[in-house]
Amino acid sequence: MPQVLEFKLPDLGEGLTEAEIVRWLVNVGDVVAVDQPVVEVETAKAMVEVPCPYGGVVTARFGEEGTELPVGSPLITVAVGSAAGAAMAAGEQTAAAEAETGSGNVLVGYGTDHSRPARRRRIRPQAAAPAPVPPAAAPAPAPVAVVPAGPVPVISPLVRKLARDHGVDLRALTGTGPEGLILRADVERALAEAAAPVAPAASPAAPTPATAERIPLKGLRGAVADKLSRSRREIPDATCWVDADATELMAARAAMNAAGGPKISVLALLARICTAALARHPELNSTVDTEAREIVRLPSVHLGFAAQTERGLVVPVVRDADRLSPEGLSAEFARLTELARTGKLAPADLTGGTFTLNNYGVFGVDGSTPILNHPEAAMLGVGRIVPKPWVHQGELAVRQVVQLSFTFDHRVCDGTAGGFLRYVADCVENPAVLLRTL
Image 1 (cartoon, rainbow, N blue to C red):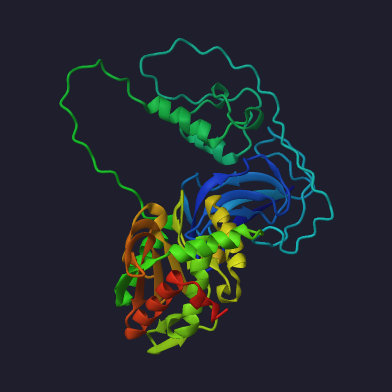
Image 2 (cartoon, helix red, strand yellow):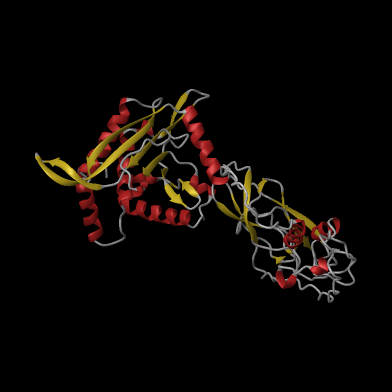
């Protein structure tokens, strides 16, 4: 007899306690190899493919797509052992699969021996006997249980029990699973169709009042909501801003890119200016330990930057940004932005930031008073860079102007915030100022 092992939703790290099932990657009856991804879940941090540490035949799945499961709850069960395809229900269904022992891994590729090629085969259910011709339908019949006269393409005992409890004739169903396999969804669809009332003839009716749409605050959106609420509760923040002439900065970037090599983005230049400003004002690269009543100055700058995705706003983090050149920062921004766009950011890519650069100019706006990314102490906001009238060298001219806003934790600094922002604006207006710190 095969051994049926239960695989539970593992701890995905970073203090996550739950995940939402986005897409099942296997069906009941599939043969899976060790460390094969079986489900795609969405946590509050990122989209993650969860691999199964066992090899064998999938005998059950727990949770429909869109269901939120806590860490430690069952995901799937797998029949393992040399007889993994033994009879699943009263000898009606047989299958054979080479099963392997579990690796115990949570994520793919962490130390598993893949030297033995895994063989994956799909279970082929026995052909179903011809369905008998049903009698003439009576008005509004209730589902009637029919004793099967032969094998039925059903593997899961849960599906069988669901059909038996509700009197559904499995032989009358057409399975939507692989090679006609009858799934739980097929039984539930049959129950819904049987319970659907017959629509009455159309008649004039009073219009029904519109109902408000309710959108659950869960997953990424829920995590962001919790973090912003906590930031607003705990941090006494303030914002100051200044307009700056970015004409020389844009000219410097154009000259850098014309010299050849990888292109350097405006965001990378602004990030390099931020790291130089933080070197002059290290108190802004800090957090506040409320229990110890201490300001904790951090030794490295892990720079977060806001990125808008289909899943919502995420803030990937560039590690050790203070050690990177504009070229290196450009490469990291491009890499993390692509991962964010495709939903492949790991939870570690979204945590550990010490300072945030928020480029809301991409949305066509000039200014903002953002909420700090708790527990960080400061954030620089950058508006759009647009041609505006500007007094340059005593004369009115059209220049490339940008509004810079700086939000900070007032517990950490007061007048220092103005000094930080003024230095950033000076570097934007005259990039040669930055050369002193390179």
